Amino acid sequence: MKLKRRELKEFLDEKVEQYNRPSFIECDPISIPHQFTNKQDIETAGFLAATIAWGNRKMILRSANRIMEMLDYSPYEFIMNSSVDEYRVVESFVHRTFNSTDLLYFLRALRHIYKNKGGLEAIFRTYQTADSLQPAIHELHKIFFELPHEKRTERHVSDPNKGSSAKKLNMYLRWMIRKDKKGVDFGIWDSIPPSILSCPLDVHSGNVARKLGLLKRKQNDAKAVAELDGVLRIFDPEDPAKYDFALFGLGAIERF
Image 1 (cartoon, one colour):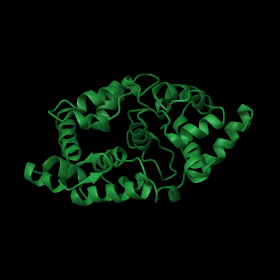
Image 2 (cartoon, rainbow, N blue to C red; image 1 turned 45 degrees about the vertical axis):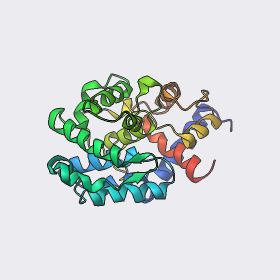
Image 3 (cartoon, rainbow, N blue to C red; image 1 turned 90 degrees about the vertical axis):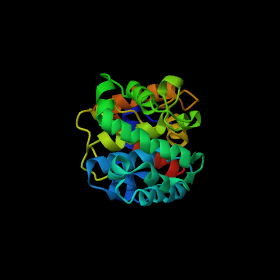
Image 4 (cartoon, one colour; image 1 turned 30 degrees about the horizontal axis):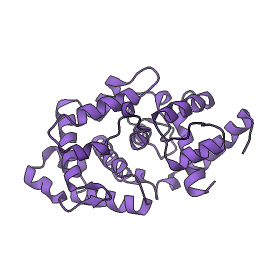
């Protein structure tokens, strides 16, 4: 599909308007943190939901809702105040390759971050650069695994410095930082500008971006994220990640 840059921007802007609305929430992992109003509940529920957001969307939602049920629908309070024995309620959990060992560690790591590091937002605020959150994702990975853990669990927190597109974390950051009053993204992290967000890159958004001529790199990796950033930030320097709605909607929903 060959369009001039102005026509392409208009086309994508129309798709953003089509998908960036409350009806998008129902079948998307963002529906999990939308169950909450407390800031820390939104942050922790969103982080856990984003972590398991790969594969069949119905299965993702079923698994994420099961986690919320196990955490008594008060994820932040459960993480911060439960005993080691109470944490064991999650021992039967499994979602694809993310199992109870991983989830138990995630609960411990999140408690460590909120007790000793000022919370998730503080990490991203501290390590953001003028034009990127990818270095902050790298620092999160280091901080997240400061506690004793099994090596296998590290696969569930991506690191752009190792070449990962960090799709799930870039999606999570979009949820927390974008603020446009459309009712989908939360925009509760005022300390970080939406202009430095990166578009979550997965098989759907990557394929659509290539078909539209936005992306030449064949792999969905950190270099592809940087390449796509360069184009989307021309289209909207203040809010480039809004195009995630267009690219994902075209790919996953319209089979573009």
